[in-house]
Amino acid sequence: MMSRENTNLAAEFFVLSQLQRLGASVHITLGHHKAVDIVVERDDGSMKTIDVKGSATQDWFADGLTRSKKSHFVVFVASVNRMKDIHFAPEVYMVPCSHLGEVIQKVGKKDVVRLKTLRDHSSTYRDAWKKLM
Image (tube, rainbow, N blue to C red; front, top):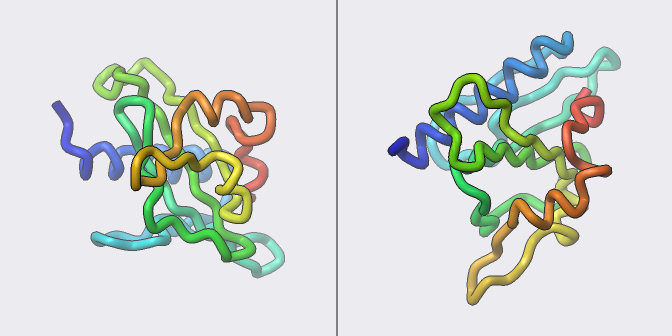
């Protein structure tokens, strides 16, 4: 089984790769305990920042997610129990941090984002790569 850290790192590089393929000018930040994983430099000189959350299953813990930055996104990458299948494309959801309240649920004392909730909002967030450009 892949560690949570490796799952997140694989998700970060997947998102970086997809944005690079779309022609974005992207930079990855490395290290532990960071709120920004990827920076997208736009043609007009402005920046968008991304926090990538990878999951090998169907849920993400959402404690501590940044919710107030205007040009900050959380990208949820779901491998749905197929993390080691390199022929499987994960489900990817781009959620502006100002919209996180729509997808975060309380489970006990924890904030959680469920894949089912993201799928319910799929027309807005799934594969919305252009929002990051």
